[in-house]
Image (cartoon, rainbow over all chains, first blue to last red; front, side):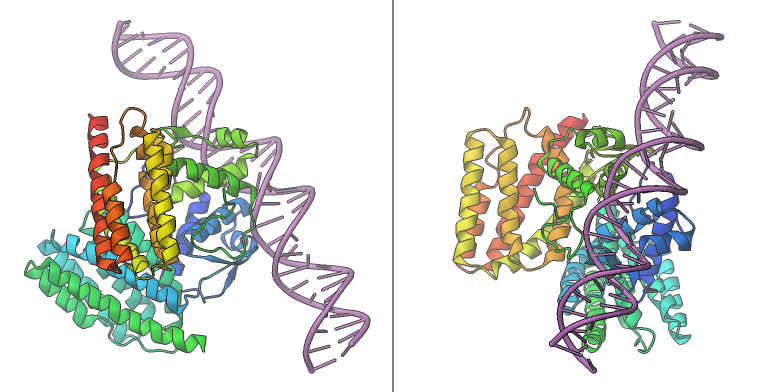
Length: 228
Length: 228
DNA sequence: TTTTCAATTTTGATGCAACAAAAAATTACG
DNA sequence: CGTAATTTTTTGTTGCATCAAAATTGAAAA
């Protein structure tokens, strides 16, 4: 749990204010899909939960709302977002453009250590899937992707991608109570690592794009069923 | 001056809070490059300037800082950002991917009215350049681009692009005290409109990409000179 | 039973004062 | 005269009380 507002993009100063912690925790829960979409969050409830006054609690919620990690359902009601199909489609197109770019750039700066790290992340994905620990699987999956993107040395790009993940994060919640996640992207990840090993950035990009498209189909199904 | 937090992406509720106005005004000034990069902004100064207490003023500054429209220079000092060359390069690559996408999507949903609006915006750009009113020229230029992007019906994409413009906005400040802006993108804009008229989205995308690259070269020159 | 309207409670926004930490200014020392 | 230490000022953060607006509940009427 980092007390930094954004692990990717440095924030030179900005000591860990009290409200930053609440922000970080909430953000992580949102990313992992721990919240039920549509769940209502109030200043006072957060304040009580974290044991602080309303000012920093309100800060944390506001920050998340600005990033659209939370959305307004009414003038005085912030809720965990529930993506519509058209929003999911839009985010997917953006992810293809942005993560494609990040993957290609990251792949062009490969190293043996990174490959090992990726493999390690993949192992964790597999083991989590075996244990049916879908939350962990999603988490490790996130690490796999951002490990690759991180090599691009493009902090702004990465933080923007993170924003997109934040938006879809809550939707994952629908994924793991009932639905089994198929071995999402195992072969895609393997293809990415192969491309990496052989110094073929375009191949890595293609693999990641396919991975994104596969994930899109999964979520699309969930959202369709959930909307009906 | 809209009291809405984000003109592109709807925010159903969220009445125009007091601090929202300060936020909107500051954001606009940032976008137009009215601030000198490196300029220090303090809570109390903003509070006094807008005639409010520290709480909403602090809110406004915080929001801008989250979006990186302002950055921390120290633990207690937010300043108007001064892009480095590498940041400019990064933003440019992201703009190419994102605005290219938006342009192409927007172009595929063209209409005669839009063409007229674009032409009107272009006229305003030209007249502003004649008057050497560079602030106005930049403003009309922004309108031209977002008019096109707006047709894409992709609000998330558009707000993300706006974020990027927010980041580079302040850099424009260096542009217009001394430097004359060459007729930036006049021919590119014409090419875009032509492609639009002929129903060639790919052509529009190419024109916009060229426009972005041209603008990049301009800013690169300014930043290089300013850094030395 | 359903709908409408009023009363009640909840909730976000704001101003303000107090506090701690960081900046800036000033002084002392080399 | 320049540098380091110290004092003074500035500044962000937080808690809390208050207010207005919105959400919720409940009652009354159709």
